[in-house]
Image (cartoon, rainbow, N blue to C red; front, top):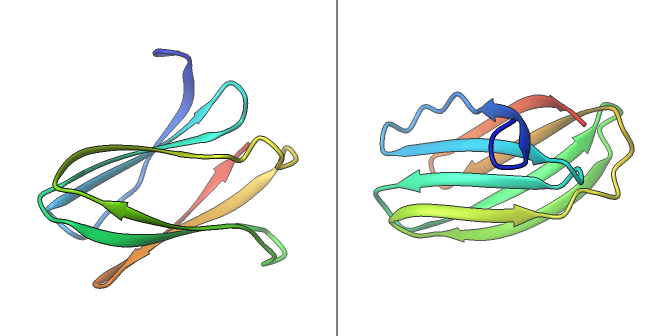
Length: 97
């Protein structure tokens, strides 16, 4: 465990100018660490395996390092899908809470 964070999930990402990591902290909330060379908006959505949208947030990303917090402590333990999308990309991965 590093700095109170567990389950580091690097997101495979097609945009070479952006690097995204999703971390689940001990309280079950998500920390998004995004490094980008550009400013842009992203949409972050979390779905359960039945396809029900559990969380939806629009976030602004700025050039450089970005640390964003996404409250997810209310989600039950289980498997979820997180989708992060912007103007020119969309990436979905599974994570376990």
